[in-house]
Image (cartoon, rainbow, N blue to C red; front, side, top):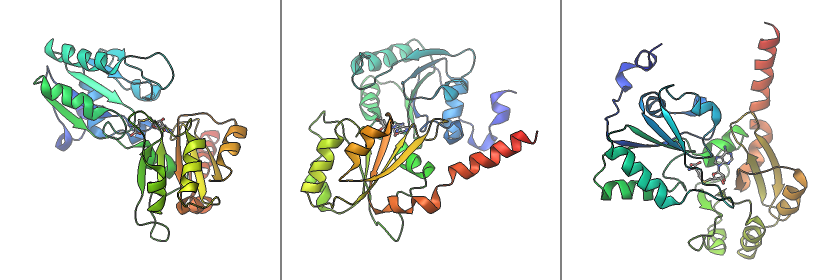
Amino acid sequence: MSFESSIPESVLVPFAPGSVWLAGSGPGDPGLLTLLALQGLRQADVIVHDALVAERIMALASPSARLEFAGKRGGRPSAHQDDITNRLIELAKEGHRVLRLKGGDPFVFGRGGEEAQALAAHGIPFRIVPGITSGIAGPAYAGIPATHRDTNQAVILATGHSLGGGPDWRALAATKAPLILYMGWKALPTIAAELMAGGLSADTPVGVVTEATTANQKSLVTSLGTCVADLAASGLEPPAIIVIGEMVRLRPALDWLPGQMALQNARENNG
Ligand code: SAH
């Protein structure tokens, strides 16, 4: 099946040679790709992707596309950000259709802004393709809504990565708005302590979702006072989204994924 025939005509966007699409792949489930990201995967000559882009998504790339790994993962030796942007510029100048594919949304803690600035500075035409961010979709796949009228009228997306100083946790705690933490795993002891020092109670519910929206998704509900010990004892591993706030209490009734998996298994077993 040609890719054009699989995409409704009203949403077809041609990928111009010599340009870059800076796209989000969503959190892992290929069903959460946007139609534009799928078109990027089907039309690109070169795909420069991150470690966080799921294998099942890379499998959707056109067979003729060249894949380049630009993995950057906390703590491990990794490509330098400047090397990645220089590579994007070089590939575009060579006339390729370059898909820069990132996990989640490229403009949410993904350094997509920096890459776009570099492309703009070099006069490379580019398109931003937003993706479904893990901070919203991850909790949703664990039955935790980002907002609910009964619990919160605001929500804070924050990074636990302290490069660039990190947020003022006590000031964030003072807002009483729930937090959705990206890259919060390593610094959680400090973050939890600071949030409590800033006035959040130790029994504030905490929901952790690892490898969200993939077949390996796991989750855990704990509290601000016990989350560090519970997480250490859990055997869970990052990448994780950590939700701190009352909406985590809604999970027991809204945890829909196990039921859907059961339905799917039943269908498969019945042939
Ligand atoms: N741009 C991405 C975030 C990149 S920062 C987005 O919008 O989702 C990397 C962090 O994102 C990870 O440390 C983790 O906190 C989170 N993350 C990304 N994918 C995830 C997934 N499938 N499950 C849980 N956390 C995820």
